[in-house]
Image (cartoon, rainbow, N blue to C red; front, side, top):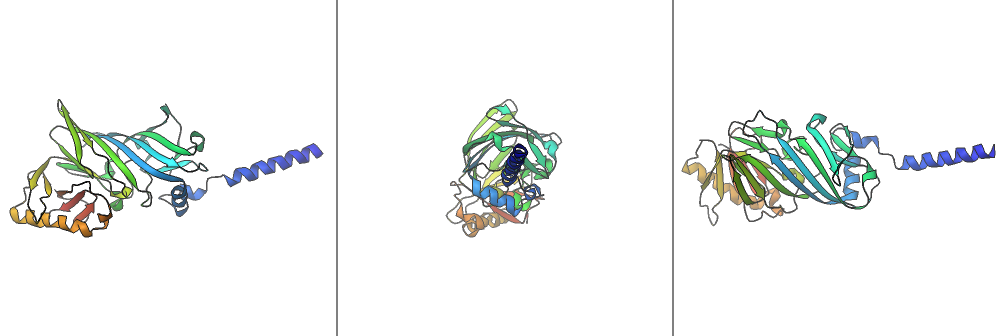
Length: 293
């Protein structure tokens, strides 16, 4: 009888300890719950997204992509939980230390068991299809929508404005395309009909401000005050001189825009895009989108 009581006591102790480490159901809610956001803010820092996108010329083809995610964990009391597209089919595989690992997918969240981690620096690799509804596109361009204007990012991420990060983007695009993002281009290499574009690493910025645009973009420079901003337009819709002056004047507004706290890496590209599903002028670090007037 005593042995039975001792055994029951040990079982209760184990259950009590296990419950204290249980992942709350609120973490699995659609979107980012306050509980999930608070947990990640407490445990995760120093986030870097190293993103590769292979963009086909035909918009009907799937967009292959991969992401190396680097971050620091001060403690490991819960699984690592990232946010991604609500359709699990877009996520192909997850790797940790070079090995494919299992994950759980629920309500737009990727859950990776805490057994894979110890406190300190972490690295995960994701292979996925970039969701087409994370893009705004027409026959001339494709834009990765910043998630400030959309429900989710086009890649696995911590979807929280209080978890800023740096971004390092590499793209492969048709040689007839031009690509722009928040940071300057470091190198372009053409092989046959494909162009590899390597961007500089961004400064630390809000994750919801990251974006890229690629397509048939053409460059014009228009002097405005002390600045000569790089203005790009899509397709054959060349802006007239009066429009260029009005567009160029928008660069001056970046100093008062909400993103002015960020380092613009010495460049700001202004991109004129028709039918863009964003406000008339949308300011991002190093990148300003304007729809045609």
